[in-house]
Image 1 (tube, rainbow, N blue to C red):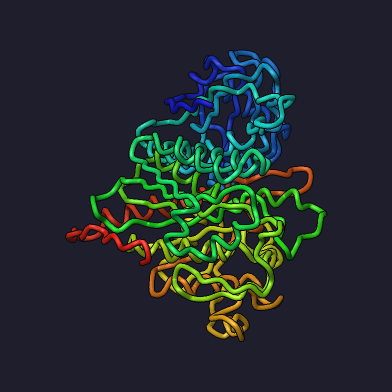
Image 2 (cartoon, rainbow, N blue to C red):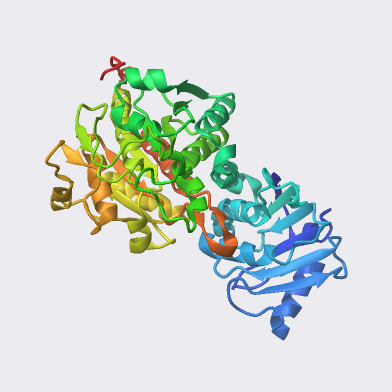
Length: 503
């Protein structure tokens, strides 16, 4: 889908060559104009046909004086990003005509001060309402919408926000595509191929390690999860080089379990198909790198994706087995369905070689987080107040919120084991917290945060499918980090030290 930004007065909107116009009407009223659109909206408001309230709509067919065939007026409240997203979603539900190929999205009636944030929110909102998964469904009909003209008062004032919105749309679509794919169409090898293809974009580099390389690194926890599957594991390393040479990167680690049966601790059959979404963290890292290639912020970012299947064949790891992680710490596997933390712990140890300015792992890790926070907010865990605050702020701004959860030392007591340095589970109580405490054992003093996206990465039921979260949160955090780097006093940067394979 093509998005273009254009200066558009009410009179110019009257004659815009589009199949439909979606016109955002603010609470403060329709701006004074002798245009047909302004007259239509003013009359609709005065007569009460366009009711007050964010998302209230009025659809018109071939209104006099307007070139577009369809016009939808929609209430946009105060023009905030949250109101805009709701308004666009409501308006787009009325624009599903098969003839809709060109859409005009009129934001120029909003206050000028609100148009930047409105454009940033509106672009991914339009894309989300137009998204259709077709990869394994030949009968699915892609939405015909191909071009969207976003009309504002002054292009220069909105351009930066518009570009962020467009990058977010690209990233979310990438994440949704790979998370939605059935497991036989998104194997670890296929995920690695997708990363290689992404690596062709300017500023990106990709390296893929296989079982031999992972074994040489001593990633015993990762290998243990993968050994029950016929599909070979892959360890994907992505680099975005937008900052100073040698400057410490932000490192993103995405859980990539392309299908999770639970292993020997087999899951119930009901809704097990949704375990194809257990690579939502990996999908979000791929999506974030696709967005970085569009937004091009001035910082360095590394993405690490440990990816494999968790299967229950004769070679599968068993409850009670003890494995040695890359860090040298031993783990008693008490539950093979707590596998995500096992592949993540080795990736977190590997991340230390980059001496990151921030280390963030993203994982569909625990059902306990779904119980705690539902599908509204992702769970956020960090011992660093500054990092936690930055992630929360980014989530609020990007309309992709998270909520900070506790990490008290006492929560880690349940991980004690008689036969290893730790167990991989700590019982039912506070399961999301104890999972985070497990991961914390592998990050030492690094500035680390963990995002549990088990409740936010996908939807079940009639709307089943990936959401593309938390790509918006991650992209906003990285843009904010780039701004913080630019605002900080210049300091000499030492090249990141390469450690030996056993580091």
